[in-house]
Image (cartoon, rainbow, N blue to C red; front, side):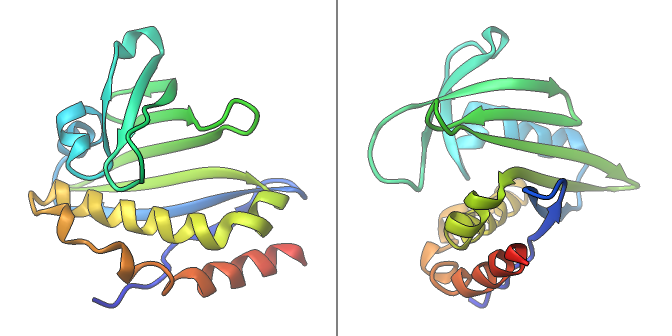
Length: 173
């Protein structure tokens, strides 16, 4: 399978950027929302979660990552079926992740955003970018009711490492 880097960096300040990826679906936002936010459906492409979302925190086990550890996910914003914004990762350097859904006639446009400091872009974008391409394509498969497990990580990494490294180097300028 041939994949390409679809994401781009959008500067927000001199030292801050957003990694942005778009995907389109031939279904209404509510369908995509369910696959994004329901634990069982989310488990088909990214990971299952447990806990009470109304508490503002759930714990997620990623399906395609090594280890069995649950990671804490803080829910920063949740407006069905339009926006979900979460924070996950280590307490000293958590990742903020946003997904926006917009209805466009019979289709839905998804915009994924991960804010990043310049030093993170320079050190991690060539690793993180291919990972989000992989997960976003797994989401496409899950929404289409296809088997996301047929999407192979080896098609994304290292193939997309260099295009994202080029983006990172451009951020140095």
